Image 1: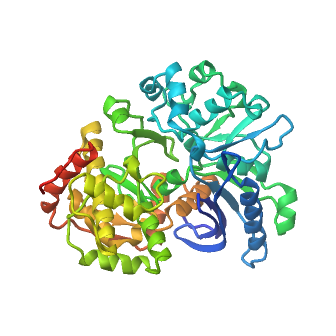
Image 2: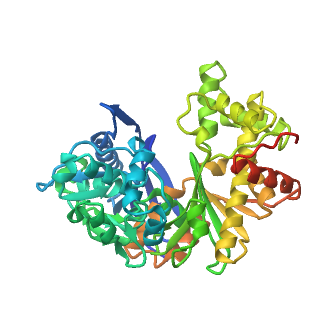
Length: 501
């Protein structure tokens, strides 16, 4: 893979911030440089929740302009990844129909209305997605139910990364990985789930042609390129769903290795990679979904509330005058008593709360456990509960596939938490490899190189990851002490009371 250096730009968009990351790829290794960062947040207005999509687009243009000021040669390609489920609508003239709505506005009632027409289990066996209120399908049906003029006048529905790519290139498409998050894609037919969409009265013509990751789709519009002194910059369809890009960067060394991945950050996306989706009642009943991979396969996974629990605690501690770094919090957690108090991280008790420490205390009291009274005890409760939730997820994945998982790969910002990484190894009894930290950006950048023909396949892509980043290894220790805690966790997850322990 001896090549001339490529300058690749990853536009990596999250719910709290967005970044422009320059990747310099020489054919064997890639190096990263952040050239632009901006804050992102949803906006509440008139009882609706929106994303400021024009603010995001303005900052994407700023990233191009900052690259144009750098003396590093031509920009070879760019790609966009973002969160799933949310979308924008385009009218017949190619204009945006209002700001993009956020899934935070949808409710269980919206989901129930759909299920009265098409039961949730039936939808799962059509789409491979479990039922969550945030799914695009439920968002769109709410607009149909309300007689919303936006959807009545829409010519195209585009997921957030596809919408921004349209702003940059003028090309309309639906990239595969982001489309599989919508509960509107049928993996058996390899097409939109058109029959169900028609039954719900969602206009079928708004669905755009599906395109695979790792392909080129248009180039940067002259009106944008000229302001940044750029010319003829192709756009690559990467894993437009940020988790798909992160999983592409999992540094697996052998295609025959039996492994699970964890994209660890605010959320923990924990799953496996398969060639075909898994359709089983156990998947549906435990909230697992099949989402797409950049190589065209699937990620049977569980979406687990992750380090957001700790982030919310830290915000409250800061308001109360304790501005602790994450390093200080983890050091305090190491000193706290082990396996004393446990929570189910994904329990609805922890959604939309004003005080996370208070809510954790209420949960522990209700389930007959000691209440964590210090910052270190609270942090340890969160870390241990996440490790146990990972173990629960692995047990279900092994049951679903009939295969033992031998190794865990953790990518994303959560890889920096060495205590949680070691707890994951100890609790699951599996060796853990952590890194790279910037998983989604790395996967985005190297999928661009694949689209340009500089990388042949996912195996070569992951070889570049192993060549480029320092990875940390964690071997399991003291796994047996977690067995009792795992049984306690199963009771907690069923809302049982474990008083007396």
